[in-house]
Length: 150
Image (cartoon, rainbow, N blue to C red):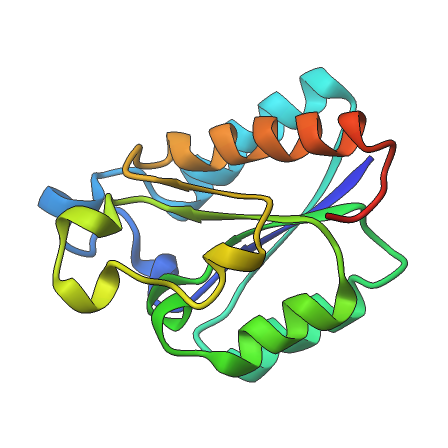
């Protein structure tokens, strides 16, 4: 199985960005952690991070016929980007939305995302572990559905 792991805006600053809220783990730390889990399951991961909406959309579109599913932490774009939602819907690949913080315990504008209703599932509030939980959930979904999309 092949999975694309996408990190949205500002996630490149993890470890330095508001450590009281986001923790001290860097993006590299999180990627090493999820890669170890993927290796244990025999899953191939591709990672990409961008602060630019269009670049994330390009990664999603380029994933068509290349990966079996996507894990995405859209950052703030999850609350605002219709284009990101449309790209995920267009490729029709199963995806899990992850967030480091519990978005429902934060500002009201963060309580809703534009992706969650088309995602296989959403994981929020477990820091870097959210990615590993997201990978486990996505793999369980892919196995249960024999690679079929949502």
